[in-house]
Every structure is written in C-alpha cells, then in structure tokens.
Image (tube, rainbow, N blue to C red):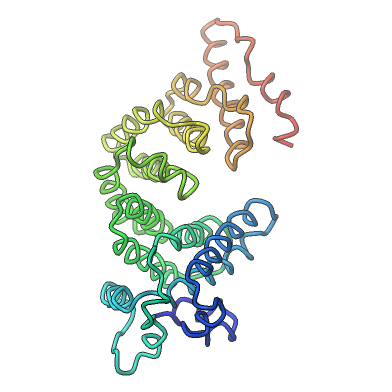
Length: 329
C-alpha cells in the first residue's frame, strides 16, 4: 500500500525508504519527525499560495509528507487501513513488501494521525482544482485512504472533511448521484458551532459550506429545485453565523450564492448577497470573480430599474468597476 501511494510521483531513493531509515535519521525522536511533517505541510500550503505554479511543487511535498506518515504507523493502524482499503490493495502479510515497512518498533511510531490530514486535504484539493496530471484511480485511492485514516482518529471534524472531498471527487468524475449523496450525509452530521471554526483552523475553510454550495448548483442544473432551495435555505441560515475573519468562507459563499440567484433570475437576492464583496479589505482566491458577480447583479438590477423608471443608485456597477480596476485588470 505504501508503494502504491507514490509509485508515480516519488523519487526512486524515497521509495526504498523504511521506518528504520527514519528512526536513524531522526535519532528515534518521533517529536522531531512530527514537526518535520507539520513543516512540510505548511510549506506545501504556502508555496501553493505564493508561487505562480506552486501547485506542482506543493503536490510533490504533500505526497512525500503522506508517505512519511504512513511509514511510521503502528502495526495495528496499518493493518486496519489495509482492511478498510481491501478493494484497492491486495493484502497478504506473508508476501506484501509494503507491510514490512510499517512500524513494529512501538517506541518510534506516530500516535497523532491527524498530523497528516492537512497534507491529504491539500493534495486532493490540488488534484481537483489545478491542471496536475492524475487519473481517477489515483484520486479515488487517495481519497479513500484519507477516509480510512480519519476513521482511525475517531473525530467527526476530519470525517466531515473527507466526505466533502469525496463529494467533489465524485462530481469531478461525473458520478453526480454519489456526489449528492455524500453532501447530504455531510449536512446531517454538520454542527456549525462544533465544526465551522475547527474546519477553518485545520483545513483553511469551512468546507461543508462550500461543498453544499457546489452541490446546490448541481441540483439547479438537474432541475431539482426542491433540493436546491433546501440547500439555499441551509446556506443562508449558516451564512449569518460564519466568522468572516476566520477564513474566506463567507466571502466565497457570497460569490457562489449570488451567482445561483442570478441563474434563477432572482436579481434582488443576487444583489443583496453580493453587495459589499468589492469592499472586503483582504484578498482571496474568488475575489475577482466576486467583484464581477457584484457588478453583474447590479447591472441586471439597474436594467430592471430603468425599465420600470427607477434611477440607479450611487453605489452602481460603474463605480465598483472603477474602484477595483487594479484587481480586475
């Protein structure tokens, strides 16, 4: 199983690494290795944000981080993972070379599995959102490995994140019903007060909100407006609770939800939701799209108002475009 993780992306020298190599390298100090895993993950996160094609280096770093984490799993954890992934990995302890790389030395085995979770999340997000060359088999295996690992941690916040990843993964590969099913399960277990800030802290965003928003667009395009409006109600109820300083989740939701209202030709709601996006002080991935959405909704509202003999307001689309010329150019 360990070799399967990096059979395509790891350098040959790293593929031959074992738990014993790591024990010698870190002088038996698991705390030092854990710190290394955390630092590698943070480097992957930062290089994705700062470099033009940072996702390429970040994906390599994430793969290596996951690989290191698996090499120092306790034997019991490793066996549990193999059993959970039986549909992907043939397991026979007598002849499986990867089994010999799991940690038999309990003094040098990782106790906190959650340390590797942000690397899984980061890698699978890159697979979804960037032009990295991969295939459905590799993505599906990694996503299910992430699910299996989080089940060992027995913490809902991590299981919720994996379900969001699976939902987006199924959608990417045109398995819409599976994607929608996962998102509905997420809605059932999500508790804003317990999970929202924790998701933002651990994974950068409240991914439940973004997952439900994405699946709302699927319901709209499928013509299932009952389910779509149920999701919209869910999102609007939670939007007022979101901490806009903890992450860019709320700002991103404004962009996506306003666009849905525009598609549904509910222009007043589209304007209401998108108003103020252009005035958000901090930068985030969807901000240019958000400004365009705010402008579009106001233009449509202005057109409707002019048709009905109503003068446009001072906070109109032209002013917003002029004020944000640098961002949009």
